[in-house]
Image (cartoon, rainbow, N blue to C red):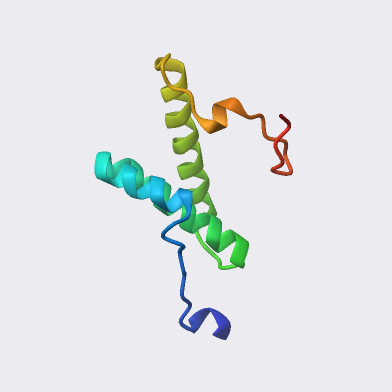
Length: 95
């Protein structure tokens, strides 16, 4: 538990496409950008082994998935990188 009490720093690469797109989303929809940013933090905490409220994190994942699916289903003009690729469970692209 002492390890969790130490100051920890999250460093982000401002040029990373995820951060660039998150910033663009923030300018259009702060609520959606906040949800994505929180999910990004959840992912970092899971990967780092830092305890967090997994139930709230899972609820955010479902909200993000639902919003994304809603966007794809209700907007014929939307084509994203994710919609052009099929991802296997290990994270590798299948096509």
